[in-house]
Image 1: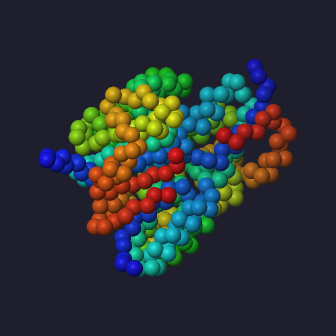
Image 2: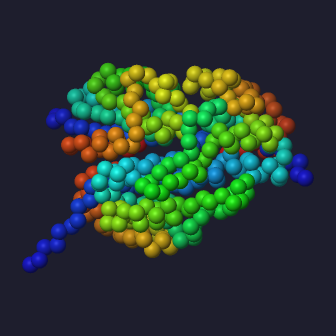
Image 3: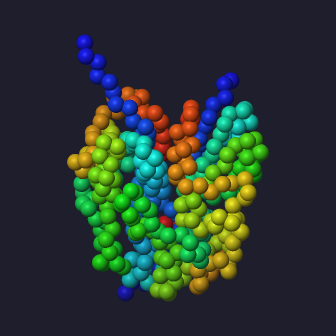
Length: 110
Length: 136
Length: 130
């Protein structure tokens, strides 16, 4: 299979149910298959850095995936930057636009 | 025979998620603005209850805040109107006619364009990037 | 004055910002105090973060020259509830998920096991998940 570039956006978070973790696992599988993957956590999706999905984020990073977390959403939810693990990068929406318009990028929102 | 070339847009945000359910509208607007800030052109296609955002019934302000009666709180319709006014030809907001009718939300502010879902695919094809934000 | 007592439980937070502004769940509790003077509030799940005592978050978003500085101000609303005498509780277990505890809460918010709170449900005329 040809390598593709993906931007996955997780907005729901694991408190809403199991499907957020399943989506992050999709990101892991894509990355482990050799695709270029960025996962952007936004809204309640940012809670993944601090709950049951955090191991999946580590797995994604270890597979070469890029784990990004929204600065506005983390501030909104009182998650200070210092609480973020080292494999998670806090970014603004400008970075997301750059990812989105990178060559060949396909975006998938959950 | 003359060939009419369809205009290409940079970004299409298909917003089917409802306002007042989570922060999706805020994120969509932030993403759209960030794209505008990088000289991209942006179209929003509102589906489902996202069509409530731009109803004339909102007026320009939200209802009075009983704990801050002198405060000014712009309505969602007013925010969209101001964003459109600030980005002529670079930002466009489309109301899906079927969703608007189905949700009883057919009275959009005049800046909104009505479009049939029959043109959904052609709208996607006229965009370099499409973000489908589900939740309808 | 009504004697109708309500326990409000918020376990879903962050339900809109730009379109909501002041008109969020916490505003509802603030606004209904006169009708429901005995109301109490329990925060559970991710909603416990509404009561974290911090001042980094600014309720502002900017769209070009359109500056909206009226986004929901969650912690300030909790502070107002406490100041108005509304008992506010945050779930201990859910706070722990975020590495937080009683010392991280807005002063006056109590850290409790909100399941244990069910033992007090008979005291209330209504238990509402808001």
